Image (tube, rainbow, N blue to C red; front, top):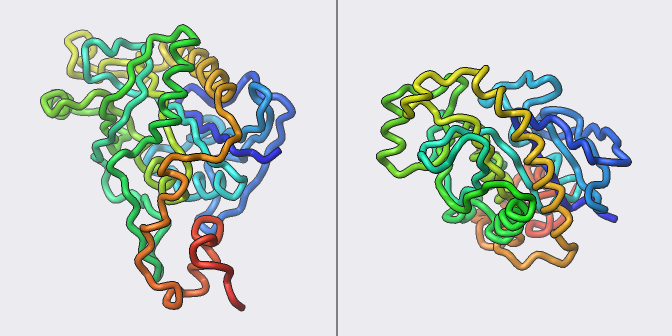
Length: 291
């Protein structure tokens, strides 16, 4: 049975306890090494592949993450849907620490991160107005409700550079802009997943109120870690239930054909080396590489 479901675990979610028949898989990519060996196994009766976003022992900062290698590795293993989990700060009073949020929008505050597979003679512009897969997000939200989590559907995830937390002025401004949660990792994953025609959603695990809140005006690692363990247990339950609900039927969402009208470069002008490098992603549109 092919592995079509990928799981990316963020801060606090470094493993999936219920994963059975597990096997470490080392994937070489043209973009370097993924964050860690990918772990294949069975969850809720289905084949999945798990990746610890920040590496074994949480040793990779958000800025250092090799997003391209991580998503490319998932693609080469046949992944069509990615469930990601990420610790976030809340920018809204009603999004209380230990709540979950399934966001539907991003706002980019990162600085110079590479967030595309394209270049080197091949140009493509995928649509990103709706950065999360609505079908996958709905399934995940329903799984969270079923699992007993307090979960909010919709909202904008501010992706900041880090690794420092926000200043109070920044945090207050994001609230004035109507932003909902803030984190440091998910935007690049979502962009690259879209280019790779992989459905993507995020389970945002609220650990704190950022620094805008009177009781949280100094966000600390200790404060966040205190909520991570409980959040990780909740996330594992939600992910297991979401995997159970996903079927193997062909996808009908726009994610599955995101590149169909996005590639601008004429095929005969694409360098052979670039075509070969991106074969798992663009091969069905540009054809095989001719020696």
